[in-house]
Image (cartoon, rainbow over all chains, first blue to last red; front, side, top):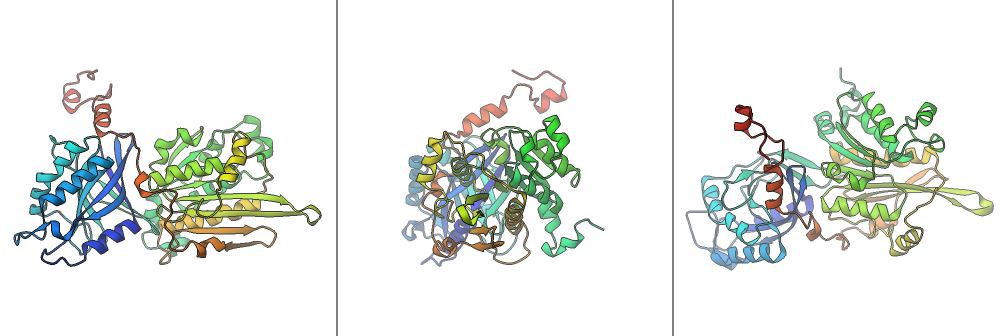
Length: 167
Length: 293
């Protein structure tokens, strides 16, 4: 089972611009991308819908990481996934060029909270995306029990179309 | 020497990009058959070609690749298309569907781009909705011949690039409730309109050009949305007034919240693909055990 993530250029540009805004005290910004899903044979298309940034007041002061979400940020995201039946993807950026890597801290923190989305919207997959300025990489959780897998391919839908492999 | 040497201006990696791309073509008549041929010439690696019909005598005035022998043999239009592609791209990834496009959606979901050369407005709207749901750019072409009475006839047509997030066929005023109602009153039949080969060629070539602009990078900032009008009497293709009027407008008809399949459930999906009869797990393959049912 492979996962392909598709997002319009317009939405991706909106996300990047938002994530580059300075925060009063956090070193970086984070947000959530909602998505719909569709089966293609045994594979799954993840089709981005919209973006919501984490509110300034929902960050915690933690100098050991670039940005730390507070419980209110996660509660709001869980509520969004549950009410609207979205697949939800946490997103942040590392900047730079090329397909980025998740850091050790990213992997550790994502594993703590992303599987909880499978509890409130179990019909969907959920995950995390890390962006660079021209590419992305993503993790996907199918349920709370299994380890995550990686998104195999990204497509930026716009003019021109851009596709890259990221597994 | 590559057969694509003369199109190297499309970009250093254009050959690979074109080969990796898959386009869906719905309707393989006068317009679609031109597109099939041109995409094969240019080196598109994958095509999903959809048409339920076979060639008939009155198709031969415009169906590219079709012969009188095909009429005699009642050859399917998809077979003619595949023959045409294989002559240029022997290793092309071709999915030929002799059915309505609604029964080819599993294949069309794979496409990077869908092009429609269909007659009806209802069908166009459905294809566009499907494409938007799956974040696939859609290029629509169509031509018509209007009777001008004592002034003869006007040959006209349009090519519209409908990109997710940008204006759609409804935003352009091309699809209206009135047109849909009128067609529905005729039970969805668009009628056997007059068709000739050269306007189809102009429109299909324009559509292929737009498609190649999206896939390669032979110039910067290609348009994400366009509505081009063809005047066959003057021999011109020009941007519709709608293009400027709709600049910056977000399409209200296809909200981004509608992407995906509303009935998709990953739990069902996993059950289906993890317990498919006949699928052998690693251990069953290793010990040559029969599939578990």
